[in-house]
Image 1 (tube, rainbow, N blue to C red):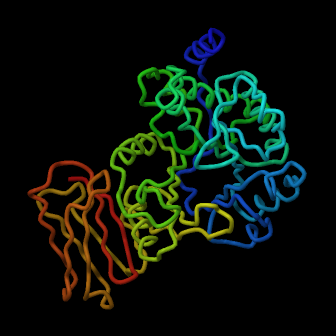
Image 2 (image 1 turned 90 degrees about the vertical axis):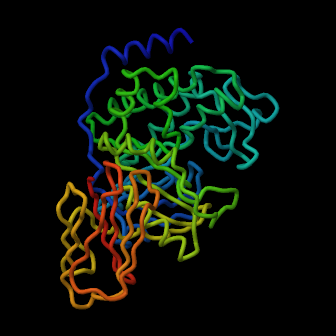
Image 3 (image 1 turned 90 degrees about the horizontal axis):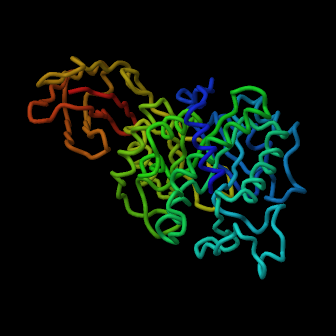
Amino acid sequence: MKRLQVLSLTVFIFAQAYSQTNLMNVKPWAYWLQTIDIQTIVNDTSFELIVIDYSADGLDSQKWTVQQIDSVKNSGKYAISYISIGEAEDYRYYWQSLWATSPPAWLGQENPNWPGNYAVRFWNQQWQSIVYNYLDTILMQGFDGIYMDLIDSYYYWSEVNAEQPLADSLMCQFVIDIRDYCDSVRGNNAFVVIPQNGEDVWDQMNVSPVLKAAYFDAINGIGVEDVFFPGSLDENNQYNPDTYRIGILQEYLQNNKQVYAIDYLTDTAKIAQFTNSAIIQNYVPYTCTRPLEYLCGGITIVPTELEYYGFNEIHISPNPANEYLRISLQNNRLDKNITIKLHNSIGQLVSELYFPDIKDEIIIDLSGYENGIYFLTVSNNKLLSTFKVIR
């Protein structure tokens, strides 16, 4: 414990400003963990970033070659490797059969929801050594970065199985140390580091402002699951946006960290609802089945900020808006069945207007709304455009 505390102090004093890859313009993405086929990824042009396992079947014997990862990168995509840093998996190369009866000090209980996955005391040096060894392979394969799962395991050790009150700060430190390790091996600062979930780890009581800053400096973005359709089902839960998580994720966007969102959906209406909700929040959306056993393809991102998709021309003015907002539609095909929705900064729908028959201009009364950031969507059947409006 004392050694880890000293490491934390070192980071506080000497935390470096990383020269990182900016992912804010890297939009469509995909996520595929089982029965992966590299050639399918290479041939698919619907996404710009792919998260895959380091191996075709999770086993070291089937790990990807440098040439295979290069083929993904040469097809114009970021190749990002999945790695769990908060749980151990019994099918990985590092697993020893004797651990079932004689577990090491760092190994915890099996996850009842995911058989074969075990909680780990991630601050333990032996577990961290396993992670760094795993990273060595990923780095040698030539991946552009890593997608680190189970960041939220800090909550398990501090609240559910409350044996480590400093789990929040220790997880932040572990992510920072991983960034430093990868950069030291790769020899530059272009390696991409994306944690998955645990987005509020920096907002906990033991994370100082300096450690928070170092954490944000160490990552390029964040992946989040089930923000809009949380629930106990594998897929197609009810739409119930988590406003707490949406509020926390604003901090990432404000720090120029891309938010990659996935909800597990197969229902086409829910996919459309998720896509629209994610775009309103400026997240990059992706949907698939929870096992991630096939490539679902990227979701085309609707342009924002006074750009258009499907409409010939849309203008909003003034922006920042006063009591009234003028929406100009200059397209004869779109003079009927216009729907306008206004969402607040945490994704709540505050107004919805329908215009079955209009000319080319709509005036919206904003006099009853508080000052702040809103997201305005203008749609006509399948045509959609989203704008950020400041009141």
